[in-house]
Length: 505
Ligand SMILES: Cc1ncc(COP(=O)(O)O)c(C=O)c1O
Image 1: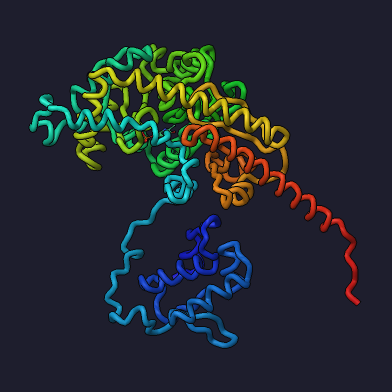
Image 2: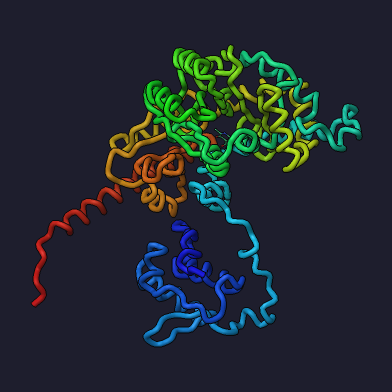
């Protein structure tokens, strides 16, 4: 077994409070206990181990020392470090199941561990994930609906239902979409376990290894990951002031991509709103090339100034737009309920894939949504969250201008959850995150959203909806302090670097 290769995929959590040497020892120890590394195997020399994990040689030495104390490895003078013969942890006679060996390889995905970390509430400290504020989850309405006399709850509805979802909910969603200028019927609507599942199903239904998919760069990590996991090759369209039509046309001619994935309204992560003229031009181009456009639209109801332009789906005359949306951002993410509007041929194929995963989405969540939408409760709830989130957007934008004015460039978004910032100095956003994390401030570094590694190193995504105005102001102040500290540290190191080297006499 190539030990270095087996360790190459492992990543350290640089933000963890656990020291690096313990993390490395943990990774190696697990492989020994799971018998991925067998007795007597020579482990990489300390220098190589240090390089593999991007740490100092001392850290690598400490990791081996720790494993030695545990009886899992031993050092042979002048020869190296080896897996111990009968480590105490394997006194069970080696009958442990070698889990790691039994599992299929997981594709190397862009930043998959990062997405998991961001979604772990105790790690994120609450402000990174782009979640709505739990204070606005409609808990009272949820209680009322479940505590009501519920005559509409037919026990039959609690059995298996169609994979595409409750007919009643599909009809209500179709009716709701009229408000977004989308004319559709139940047959074109499928209920999914969130938009994330819809993206996965589209990948399964449409993509084969080697197919090309065009995405905006930066874009939503979850989409990038599922398309990559299908084996698709990803082409990035830079998100800029103007949509890069000529580059897209070039891609269409050169690569004939299977689909184009876009978030035209309050884009994640940049907050960009695609203007109406661009939407029309894009649809003209897409129709000419018979290009499938996947329009991901979780945020269009969360506008804080004027209403956004009509969705691509609402303007789609050639039938090539697949529309996704979700209740995660407007109600609460734990509902895990989203919907797709597409041609029945695609929905049918997606439903076949969905059967393999979960047969159909959860009945209780669907039933709740039927009651909620039918009772006309959504518009009032939307008005409430729009009002509150608007105040928060204003508060964070103002505080950033006041405290970080020189250091950060951003444009206040007209809706959605995020403010996208660029650092006006040569400070890496990942370094900034390390600096502010201890002070209870968190954000997502820009590189998490890019197609190519190393892009977005000086960008960051701040989420303004999860915290109240005061907390946002304080976060901006701490961010400014961290930026100032890093600026000072940068200057000091520059001074040190320029000092003449004095010979030691
Ligand atoms: C653009 C975009 N698409 C899809 C999703 C996933 O939403 P859901 O919770 O419905 O799976 C998100 C969530 O962050 C998102 O920002």
